Length: 161
Image (cartoon, rainbow, N blue to C red; front, side, top):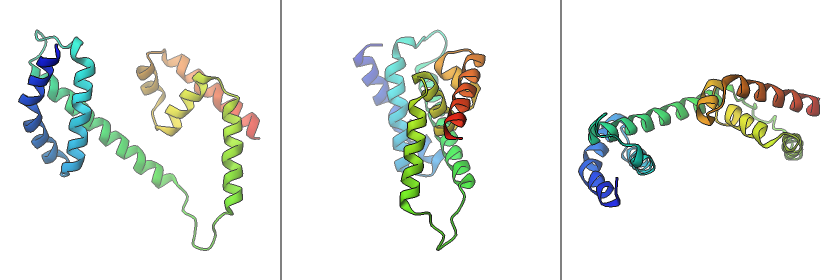
């Protein structure tokens, strides 16, 4: 797909797709963000588009639905993280120095991990992805990713006591 074809695709589908996303999300700013993500993915994947498999409209809308699903999953992960967060009762705050010390200790322990282990831990606990999702994302075997997360956690436990 050439640049002029991409521009035509955008002109043809952006407004109806935005209307669909506004209807689906109930928020125009959120819908605009998802629309931008959609066309960014379209631009990156334009060489893989095969008109024999689907029409342009079907292809663009399937990408938009995936972006919407990704947003919903991310929002759900954020909600779960907030639910797991332990609320600190009023008047019982930890001293700032302790919080800073904890972060520095964790950062030092993370420095002991390999780049792959750090990335796996960040994807697993920072992005709340499952091990199978990480394997699909990185294109690695499930057992490789699972072992890497396990080893990284073991190293962190050993280092942090």
